[in-house]
Length: 87
Image (cartoon, rainbow, N blue to C red; front, side):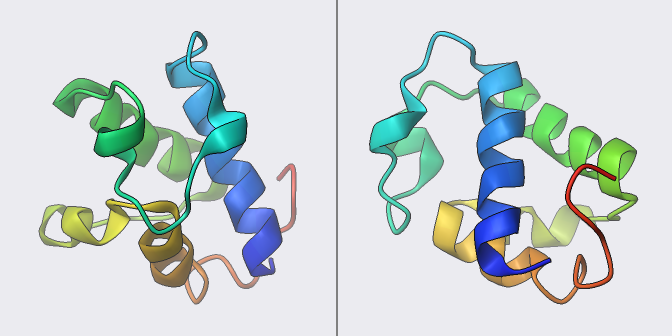
């Protein structure tokens, strides 16, 4: 996957978790929690969806690297390089 694909994966997961949020205005460099209402359970749902859909294991100590779209894409890029969109 390329960064644009990973960004779309995260948008898809966020839209499932927070269906009432307008994700079209997300600023990639700003933490998700400053832009949309996400609690700790929502965040865990994101991690679980990445595991379920793409078999990406994210250790708890790395959760902080998933704060914004930019940091999430940068973190996931090497871990999802072999994945295909929609896998």
